[in-house]
Length: 305
Image (tube, rainbow, N blue to C red; front, top):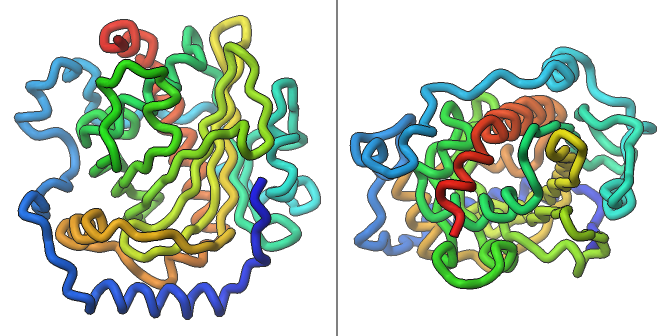
């Protein structure tokens, strides 16, 4: 995994304040296609005309019992949480962690979330297809978490290209507006090749690896990884988030302008995340993964090309 600097709360807040103010005051041109109304809750009449409309639920399905228990419980002790550098070992093909569903803070100060989701009838190939398919339309993104997902765009639409599904999202960037708990987040997720970062990914497995940052401010916040591996009834997903691992990225000024037009969620305090956010992220991840797993096989067989 890439080496990460030690978390520096004061430095991150100062950096966020500078870049946030710079973006807000820079007078970025708003592209003609940028419409603040493109972010909205639920589904529009146009969305309901999409061929996948039958999968549009009014609300997200309940979480699995283990997620509910972890959400209602306290943080995982730091001595039970692997450091970020151990992530390729944690998500090895046959890895089993001391805590598979929980939230907390590592000994070095990173925010950590783990969520385990069993998915009947689902395969790793379905998840590779999903990550290449859903990012091109907000209505598709909302299928995943209809209560919290509001907007999605992608740097390059590769969904119709005749390439392997993994190549449609690896090296690509998704731009999303979503609620994590009560807080709106505008995030840029740059998907990376897990093998290039030391992960082993056998056949019938996948690992979705992403660098998570702000759309508006050129600040990276951390990493996410979703390992999917087969079990007799289908597959299991082992999700991991490591946050407060800050860095910088080259901003996409057009995407930043679109985000500002939608109503920016830039708050310097959002760029240094705490355990309360980790708890809400655990719930959010548990909701969306269990919800989509309920119909992903049908969606895949109907729309995968």
